[in-house]
Length: 257
Image (cartoon, rainbow, N blue to C red; front, side, top):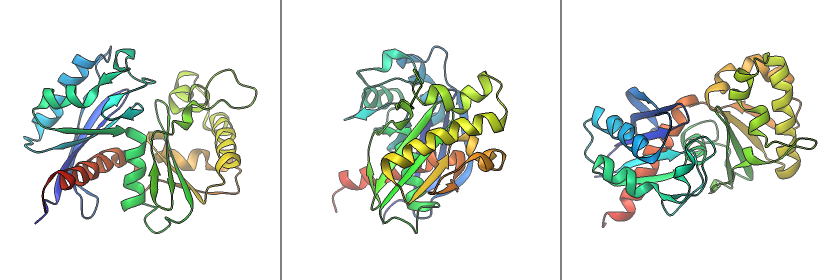
């Protein structure tokens, strides 16, 4: 019988969050646990914080982890919202050694998208192209074609016409806070970004996740798109749920039938 509970961890620029998840239903089991992301967020420091999250749940199995980076074969290839020492680092090995259990690691937005497609608002609309954008410290992205993930898209790093900075340095929620922008002013910026994505991919649906998606009503009137835009159902829990589901998938691949 397959184990129905798995642990997922979502490593972010400001916090490392973990939780137990029923991987049959996508439901969180109990409260999530959060620790601050160390400053600076160097590999050794993050690994120690990650270990605290695992220890909190007294967990003794494989772990799924979403990480703010392009991830290839367990190696973190970029570091947009985390210390640059992570570039080229075997994050799978470091985190697995820290907590004493095998850790399966993927891009954080990819796992948030996986959760929404599997359990959230995309569950019944998997045909064609669907796009998830996470709005937080940066702008994460997850692209799905007929329900299949196209990994490591990093659309927050696109350049918008007339701008010298990448999109997430112009329209992420962290920029709204840093520049003290009203929701109306920031919403117009974010609309520019979504319009650019719409012109590139003509998606069936754009799902908005991350912390700012909870404030959708404050900026939705600034969005002018042909595409259906909808806030994520799982909100800030999506990364944890997607990470737990990844752990479930990978464990089943490793376990003989």
